[in-house]
Length: 214
Length: 305
Image (tube, rainbow over all chains, first blue to last red; front, side, top):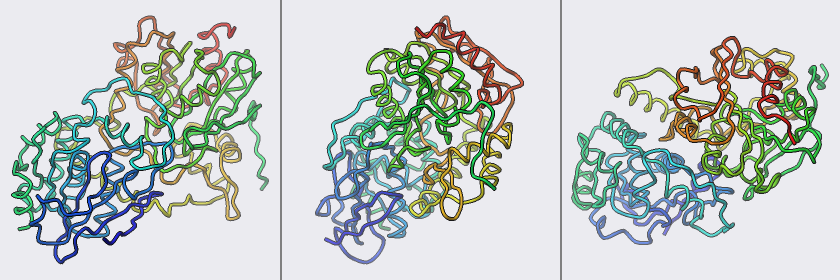
């Protein structure tokens, strides 16, 4: 499997070419605490083009930052680095990767042609209202996944109105009628609201990918 | 032109040391006797602890061990991979632990430092003996109130600009200049502060490279940004604080301020909390009027012992 090293500020990101081919790439975004898979997931097997997987900051073969400080928005910057390298993509995100796929669909609507949000670790995120933060120090561990990633990205705030703003950006900027697909069965409040928004499909993963493959 | 700048009343720290915050080196500056009770001073965004060079000695002379640190990416602290509000909170706790263990200490936070400390006082109240929030009480997002579609549009612009910044930041390096040039640049964000003060700040807070002076702030950091976090959330935490509380607000508008007025925050004030308002002073009130603010803080805190 070919691995390309991309740079996002001081972090080196591993972009894995899981399957070669021609045409628009499918970019896989893993869940919280996971890494890119070695094989194309069965639900994405029918994708006609190449398939890539990106290891987020602090995961897989990407850099483990010193002293934490994660936000989902930083992972959006990771995806931006991959999209800059690959060009137009369709994204299939699991769990946390599904939330980041949503952010990418909103931030890069002309280059993310379809974002599929599927069940997986880190789908829920934290509360939708401010709570007392857990200010805790974790034992140093330089092995992936970074414990600070698990702590901070497992409880980052995902207010409904923020998620809906992102949906509006995606729908307003995309050439697709439904640039976002919610395939997840479990739907925390942010995802429930996204699923009900105009411009969001509710197809299963293979159907959504067939739609986005065109 | 000489590199040495002085400013009336400014005094370098008596002690400097570093705290290891999970691999991120945090620079700590102290004024006053090491055996006096601790008073933490927490700087705001894009600032650094030497901005307290006039204010801190006034408090130290009254019997406080004044402790200030540079936030990660600021001043003499390490530049690191990631920055976030939660990471700043965690770094702060490392400094509190290193300086005072679990003992309660007096705390003064300015601007973003006030918002961070409001959050910490809610999360870990046992660390606080008294809390002064110096114009660090945001009550809404910056910018005008907007309808939904306008808010979405503004978010789109902000996201695009943030990503453009992130694409460039791997090679980012601050622009060099003379002391006067750096002071002039900072003056656009600090329009109420004197040239003499800003030039002093350059000489104690910037780095002198072969090709000129550079601010030390990590070039990958950027004011503003976007995300689900809302500044006013720190405000909601204020209502439940039990620690003796002094809030200070100002009336003069300027780029770094939040424009918070007493009427915006009165209902969120902690019980028995005190709120002071200075209509004609600006966001950096402790630099504009160090003696007046020091006297007010000392009177509020009472006898250090």
